[in-house]
Image (cartoon, rainbow, N blue to C red; front, side, top):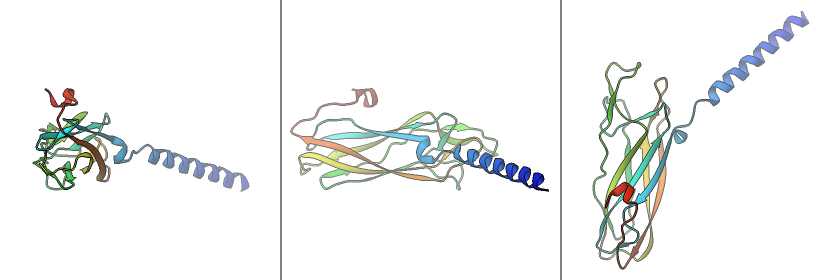
Length: 177
């Protein structure tokens, strides 16, 4: 009888370790997308218009829902800004997604994969304070694979903008010339 109890205990422990290992392989939505923020001017002069870019690097095997979602129940990618005094923002420019068919959906879904860039036009007003200015951003998305959707994530991001006497282009690889 003790022999059977030991075998049962060993089997139960093995099952617990297997379940624990499987759960630890499911990433967090925060780990699936790596966002980086760039500014098109550094420094930016008072009265100048420039852009912020949030470059989302999405882990292979995953996607996030595009801004224009295919179904009402999907959570669209969203970027919000909290501007300090002296700045004005335009509308965020979201790229077009790509329609992809997944086994869990009857229709193709509009998604972002690989690397996607969101752009936010900004203007430093004539009264913008000189020096380093901090702009808070909130990036919201839901990452999914072909098997699972992770809980939605809202990531706080921050970018520092230098306001000076003149402007100089920066990150032309993202913004062009």
